[in-house]
Length: 479
Image (cartoon, rainbow, N blue to C red; front, side):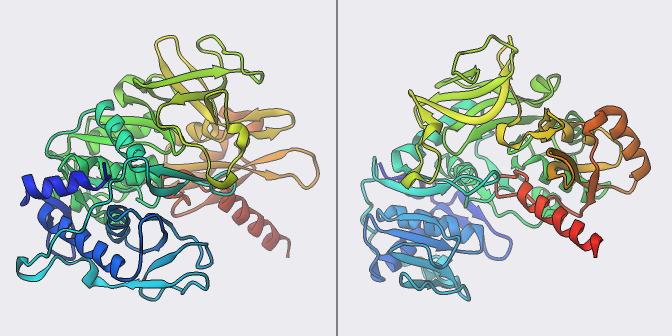
């Protein structure tokens, strides 16, 4: 089955139902959205794109990225995000003004690509590729701990993952979703597809300041936002905005949801908040309501059916409940890295070793302490950034926080640094005192106050960017 077939089916069974709601142009019904995909697919064929060819997508707008990726998949081509003009591919599809590729023909898109035919005139449908085990799209991991790793998913893989999301938790039908996660990443793309496969509507995500207005204006029922985005939205909301009566559920993933943010979000945004944990390699792993998991710091959910999770020691021996160790997973949708873009030992003996440190409680909650390769070594004692961030977010006036390591110039261990986003009630001296009281030797020696924490498309902190920024500040201070 082709991964775009459910959209064509909705175009025939519920043609007038909204598929994409855009602020700067009329809402696209399923009839219109399917016609847009047909038109783009025909343009690609006319430009010489053939099944099995790889097309790099250098498209600025999320809606354009989704539409072109789906149209390419409809004819059997394989899309992937273009990070550089010099990536090897058969064609490069780019927004006007993007740098041309020296390695492949560039196909420039414009607004006409994304408009349905005038007057309802539509030609014969483009022949849909069978899909199935054929590659659908190449996704990359977040790259927060190094070079992004590539994973290729087939049409069957993406449909299987959509079904797993559907069975993991219910959303109101028909759904109207606003997702503040970008579809260039696997998680964001699957969030979009789950809604489109179900015949719901995707609301094009505005800037942070416009999110509350968009939720109200478009009667959004389902919000997807990482904790940093959720806290940022609440910080800029007017007193008369929220909670939102149309909103049935908020999905939070990408980083830890603090108890404080969960409580404030339940009051200001929506009482039904769901936390999720997954990875590009293995898909969705755990789900729970914030009410269920809120009493366990670091809890990300219960393991969903179809997934086996174990906590093991360094030799791969399973550990008893409530014992911290390395998380490994077994799932039917797990993918291996493409072209040796990632470590080969991450997949062994039928398991995916996630690189996360955590534990599974006696009542079945998965608790994530952090990444093994991000732990901060302070004089031989190791601490995860998530532990430090959890403590910082409990201090009044702190809206968002990200901890990271900076090397000591005079000793062979790390120093703790932290970037924070603060509100009007913030007191820096009180913050420092509370950190020393709660964290002791792990209290941050360097604190960067920022307007926003740098995060990737999935909402994960870009710690290397923060390390580079701290290093630049240190050099400037020495001059």
